[in-house]
Image 1 (cartoon, rainbow, N blue to C red):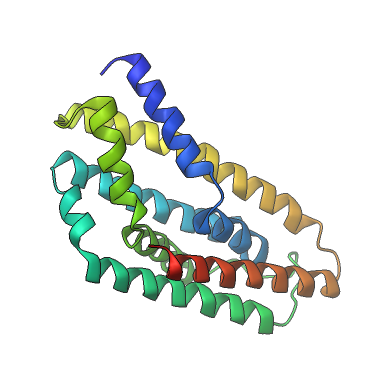
Image 2 (cartoon, rainbow, N blue to C red):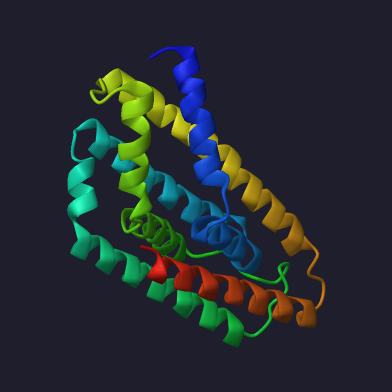
Length: 204
């Protein structure tokens, strides 16, 4: 696998990762409403889900993931319902200024990490992405070394994408100085999460 192939994969994956979608909307919404740690936890979950599909593709099992319609649909609906529930909770939450809000509990961060994995495993576009991209760029048979290199590229690209969204949302969060501003942002974030959940639910 030469340098040009890696650059082509990195560019294609960056477009895939950075394009507007439920994952990036959720990272921004969670960071604004609950802080950077929550957004990063969800982002790490999405990366884990993506890497799982990379391993499946390397093992020649991505076609199986594409065929697991019932399981993938169940995961997608469960994740979508949870996103919508969190969005409604934000709408109903009492406003707390960022300087007064406690640090997220580990249980909450673990839940966001797990949600990121679930939604990516339930994303029907993931196996299709690998089935369409990998054979054309790096061939149908991947060695363990190639998988490691591609995984590193994915992690680096996602670090830029997730980090950029978290940084933007963190700066926006710091602008909230009054309870009224927090309430408005909470409701805006809640609406985004409800919308993200709806998008996930109807994605085919």
